[in-house]
Image 1 (cartoon, one colour):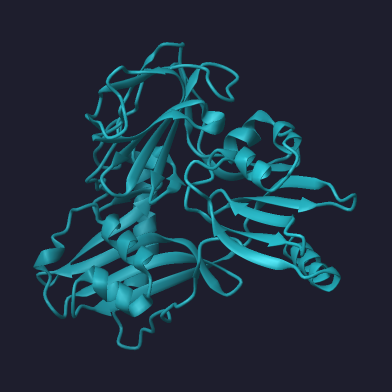
Image 2: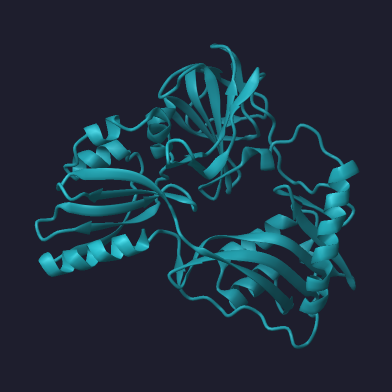
Length: 387
């Protein structure tokens, strides 16, 4: 796919004076309004399948994307990221007709280990060393508030074992912390990622923020998936949330304490409520039949408070709630935060966790050696796809 894009771009430069634009997705913009603004036939959207139209609703306001235009200012190509795994590719085919495809974002994943002796706060030390605000935030978040970072002393050590995506020579997407350690009072505290959640060395789940399941449901009708290939349709799909099937009118509750940031209609999700939780998390409740009478933007809500009712609005084949969770405007699996119960791992899961610790411990040990070399400081970060 990358070769095809580069060839098309090269031909464009030969045939006419092509112009590459860097732009951002405006607040309130939809794929339909984007089509209208760029004189793209609206049937291209209406011919999409229901799941594809709903997925197009996931384009986040503020998302960076690139557009290629000809010398008449007509759109020739656009690549619009939906998440770190999937993008919308709009282009003209051999018949000079617009085509829309969902394509995977191609990247490589690098495994990295960062080991630092503290001279300042862990956050600032990581940013100064790596240039990555995202990595600093991911490190702090991995301990879930279970470490007093204010009590650290100069010379204390920290270690981060993580993976980082890279594409076309640039850092891409969010770092994924696999494990981390921080020294306090001459003793290391550890955190390990297991089944998309973080645990201490004893296998006890760490948490400082959690959500409840927002309704009484009959079944999960669709699970979370950032990218999957449908073997029969031969297409890439994604589902950036969890669908809970339930009768029309079932009460929907706020999954956590927060402030309502949106009430209204949003593309394929129909009637929607969005709630901001602190500065990082947002929850989305889609396909509602109606809203609670006291729900409005700016309204503070409590965990468990009724905010709306299950419906079938938008692009929905049956009554259900689409429940989405976003961390720093990136869709994440709600199951990584939703808690039905908490405690220590047991049985087979505990055995798997112990094996994970055994595999990681030599990496921790090596990171403390004097000859350890940290990853180079990054200067070029890219969170969008490139032509």
